[in-house]
Amino acid sequence: MAEVAALLQEGARTLAESRRARDHSRRLEVETRELILTYRPHRVRPISGGSREVPTPGGPEPDDVLTRTCDICGREILPDAHEYEIVFSALTFVLDRDCFGLWQDEVRAAGGQTTR
Image (cartoon, rainbow, N blue to C red; front, side, top):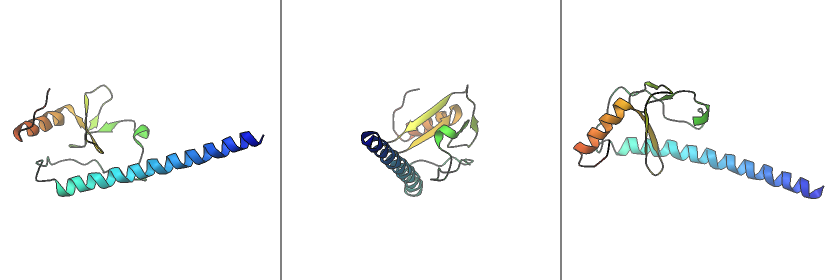
């Protein structure tokens, strides 16, 4: 019985550590997004009209959200519609089809290369 109790205690400790790591990761995502938006506006021209809130530690987890919204324009992305994720090392943006096209045009105009 002592072995079972030790395993349960180790499992509880592992679960608590996992939750702490997930919360820390969420805080880092928020901080990274704020830094990018604060110090990199000169590299990407802003597209006005976005209304999606920046994720917060107390906000809903991605698995809890039924519909996703575009990070640029704030419109809902329907489950059967095209959805694009632009992934950087510590940050991911979700875009609808129209905004993804705009993003590609901006990258091309800045001298980058993307494929459609």
